[in-house]
Length: 241
Image 1: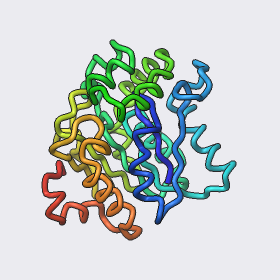
Image 2: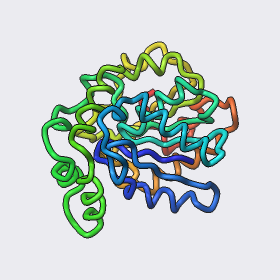
Image 3: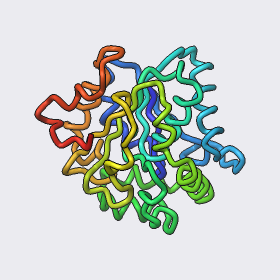
């Protein structure tokens, strides 16, 4: 499994989820260009370049196909990769991914990542490592990738996607709006959306146990089994579609 972080770039918030899955899966977490300890080179900030980097990582490690989990920007990069190279993606989960440009709170472009972390997660010993990693992000990378995702209009890419793609949103997320019914119109059972009612922008932290169970259920779906089967469980009744 390959985990990709969001605009508040820190691989650290994936650690509990990766630990929960480590007994069953080999997991990797990557820094996208412009984030964390990766190179800060402006021409690499395009979504195409970010997706190519993930593809090259897989090639170098001999990974023929993987399941992906991407948060925010990471979910958009996974979407781009799965659309361009569907043979590399067995399935993908996009967490807090904006489907339309209007779904992004302008505050994402207005303030440093550390202040947004404080706003969304508060402060404390558990949050401090995430804030330190988020502060490494190049502000130009944040702006470039936000504008690239706004221009992409993810709902149009989803319409032609071959690998299964599960959208997960926190229903109380103040940064990225949950997808409405109109954004999901025309999409088949290959794309499915589920909202977690007590989560904000970081469902993997806000409702960790529930999120991890949902991800485990998603990963164990048989090939070709519709994603809507996830909605049959009582726990996922509050699905968007």
